[in-house]
Image 1 (cartoon, rainbow, N blue to C red):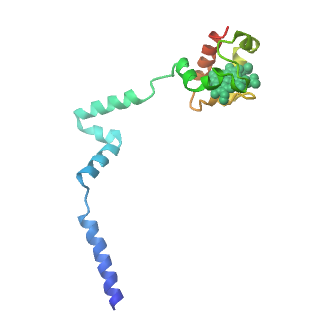
Image 2 (image 1 turned 180 degrees about the horizontal axis):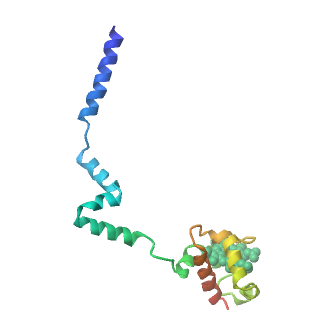
Image 3 (image 1 turned 180 degrees about the vertical axis):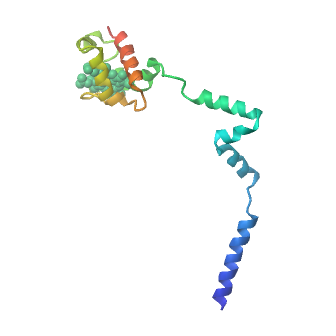
Length: 141
Ligand code: HEC
């Protein structure tokens, strides 16, 4: 008998808790923030600002080869680690450049020996890798 009473009390407590539960102002703010942008945006003026912010944050086309180089490739191609040909070292790049641009780019995309695929820039597009290889080659002749 006692256990039944306890169980019912517990169930009532759960139901009650469910009905009175509501968001605190702080929680409401969080809920507002994590709403999908489109949903926040149906309502009006603030919307445009939010959409502009999203547009600004989204990548707006290919990244600059110099930036890709500076964030990824430099780690090996500035230091010469693992015998990576250094940027600016015409003697090291000469024979590689002779292979032709297409081969260089293919090797950069797929990796070759100590050169990892995409030079560790996993989210670089083929075009971004190609532009970065061109950038390195231009600076190494
Ligand atoms: C972890 C080190 C490392 C990183 C990071 C790296 N490379 Fe390399 N890369 C190498 C090494 C080592 C070689 C020489 C491989 C060989 O020929 O043995 C090389 C060679 C190359 C070559 C010449 C390939 C050939 O056919 O001779 C190109 C082009 C190249 N890297 C482009 C890039 C680009 C572009 C990036 C950045 C997106 C990059 N690398 C990042 C290590 C690296």
